[in-house]
Image 1 (tube, one colour):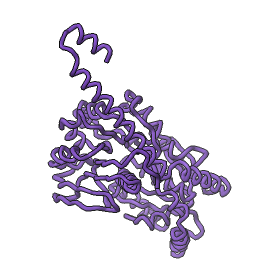
Image 2 (image 1 turned 45 degrees about the vertical axis):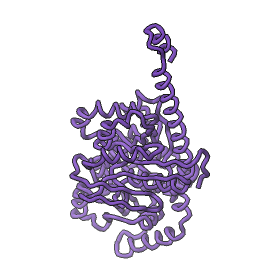
Image 3 (image 1 turned 120 degrees about the vertical axis):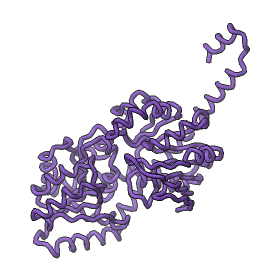
Image 4 (image 1 turned 90 degrees about the horizontal axis):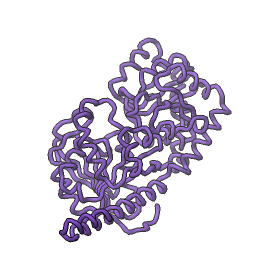
Length: 416
């Protein structure tokens, strides 16, 4: 892992949850935290538990504190103790690192005096899209939360450009590619061997032998475009392997009941080893998301690392940045089932195109989305944030020492 250039730091991260809780942000937080520990830093992560119980453990060197959850509303866990806990943790931290959106955590942090003087950075994962009424009430707090931060990390240029919260603060935004253990995916011989068995098992009990595999990985919820995927399945001559669970599974179950059960294979959960095998087994991954809640889609980079091209939506987020149209896969307008059908068929029926895009996708994943570049980038953001905070504190101290004379005071303040 990367060498430490500026000395070890004590970093306190804050997020909704932490693995084994399933979610793209949770996995990113885990990868980042473990990468920083491997680089010599001390990392403590404050998250919600799935129950009303406090737990503390060390996982792969990361100190994980799970606070008792009172309840969850609008995908936001409410932990009554998070305010006092952050007030205590900040005294021992060199820098705080928040992963947003987490409205309850951000509300509690802004309420702490420490939020005005403590250096902290934000990784901005996505806009809040669906809970518009809650956002209207929460907006003033969220503005303070963003404004008081030293720097904001965004995963793509599109997120900075199109987010109504980031675009006015573009000067404090830093675009960093998320890193993944892409080498482990690309070079995993065990996963490749397991992939061959998965393909054989899939076709051995089905009349759809020798058919390609289209993979979907993610929660089956409103913004993932499951209804659009369901419209495409009958018109694409392939097996569809769906890894994930959620309320929109009913859409797929109806298709299975209508005679497509042999081509629709739903897996509620796959551990990391099994998931890597499916990335290698698939011919194409699809991510037909329909809302900007899909801010990036890390599963695209995981598939790319396995040399599997992707068909995804052309949202105004980082999704088309992760999957470059005509380079690592194809992109289609959101909610356009016909375009999705056309692009899936284009890749599945053209071996040369599919293999070329898959090769280019793997090369880009290995070069631009590896763990080392992410850790180095985040370390640089921490250094810059700490330097900005030192400058700010020095200016405040200088202002407090200025003469009390109105004329001198005005002159000094104008220079500051």
